[in-house]
Picture 1 (spheres, rainbow, N blue to C red):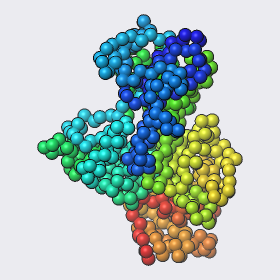
Picture 2 (picture 1 turned 120 degrees about the vertical axis):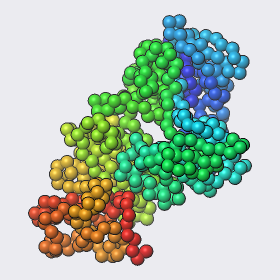
Picture 3 (picture 1 turned 30 degrees about the horizontal axis):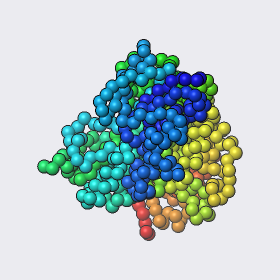
Picture 4 (picture 1 turned 90 degrees about the horizontal axis):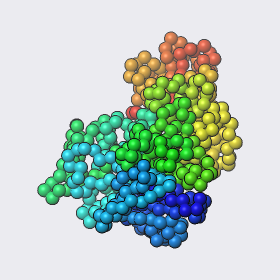
Amino acid sequence: MSNLRVLIIGGVACGPKTASRLKRLCPDADITMIERDRLISYGACGLPYYVEGEFLNINALTHTQVGLPRTAEFFEKTKGFKVLARTEAIRINRSRKTVTVKALDTGVESDLPYDKLVIAAGGSAFRPPIPGIDLKNVWFMTHPEHARTLVEEIAAQGLKNAVMVGAGFIGMEMAEALMYKDMNVTMVEMFDHVLPGVMDRDLAAYVQLHLEDNDVDLALGERVVGLEGDGDGKVTAVKTDQRSISADCVVVAVGTRPNDELAREAGLFCDRGILINNNCQTSDPDIYAGGDCVLNRFINKTVAPPMYVPLGSTANKHGRTIANHIAGQQTPFPGINGTGVVKVFDYTVGRTGLTEAMAKKLGIAYESIVWGGPDRPHYMKNARYFLIKMLASKRDRKVLGVQVAGAGDGAKRLDVAAGTLYYGGTVEDLADIDLAYAPPFGPPIDPIAVCAHVLSNKMDGIARSISVYDAKERMDQGDVLLLDVREPDENKMLKMAYDKVVHIPLGSLRERLNELPRDKDIITFCKISLRGYEAQRILQAAGFDRVWFMEGGHEAWPFELDYLGM
């Protein structure tokens, strides 16, 4: 491939990965990467952690591990390809196989030829069309300059009242970062729960409680209609459709939009992003695309349509696939699970695959379960509680999706689930994986396997469960009896805020069955509903046919509880 001319549009993630990999595979290739910014190849995902103070030098996001700045000179001397910074692609001329570019510092336009073109133009933060969006002290967290100026202005102006618009991953990270800056933080979200589109409302409610415990004020189900400012042009308040919230600092993170304009104008097939095949080729086989400007298909294309999930990890995978294909080494990119994880104070929160809401929208027949418990044996001092929610197809028992939330090590379990989805595994396959075991890392049967076992039991009709939301609805109607099977000492510390609760410890249940009505619905529970499940089995074996256990127990209960003796 001597003298092969490869032109790459975009120099943040997919672009540099493509160029670096391709130059190693094809040393004689003539590779040029253009980037409209001065900065090249920076780690945008680290911006909230700079704001928080996790590291003090913003250059850590633009330098290599050994401290070398990723400049055009660095890439040319170290990686072997040319970089044109402050250069914008303004038109793709497919018939001539050239790209018209503009040098932003001089305004001079020129045409660059290509044999293969790679569009790695990324995405842009969505700017809601509302009054006041251009006021001072309003930030979008997508560029190192945004994080640097935010930190500087918080200190210089003494900013104290921050409003976070959007409750997605960036919203979670920035809320924590601003709290660490000793600011008052209000999070506004137009949907009725945090992490919409990422988590189902049961696990989202669990996260919401944790945010409130860390003094984040939540304004859920409120739509921002404008920003108000003073005579100096600085923001003073965020106006929603319900109220006005005082603010001297606003961070907007309401989603990303693909930068696919060049592709659309060039006549390439696009939907909610550029459409690509398994080799990351567009509808023009000589033009590739990857990163945040493309639409990815779900790993199992028979289950879900293509989805837009902008992530740096996916962008780098695209870059490798593109470079390999251009070099003649076909390594198709199979798609994504939609896997994502975020740190919310000391909680790990994430998802892979489909949520329950997505499965319903797609018309998929599924079963689900929520498991709660510690991530390590209970006797380990660092054991932490967390929730796992798992969905599986009723048709073939394949795992459809997993969500995690809590202080326990959910990321480890999420990665196991992502691998299971990748290979099309069933709940039984997931339970049978030979996972590492030692008490400092997990119990003999890992939580992800236990969750799979419970879901398998539920699909087989052995376990009969009810979600916390369904339980709350039944309690509000007043037509259900709660059976608390915890020990007496546990019961003295915390009770469900409900007047129809019977307390019978699990060890006494078989001798006291006559105390329970057979003509009422019964929901059993304990701290995590392990004993609740045992109680359900005991009652069912004794002929009680209207009994369920509450998934996750009172630890997963996101509603009111009566705390006694505390």
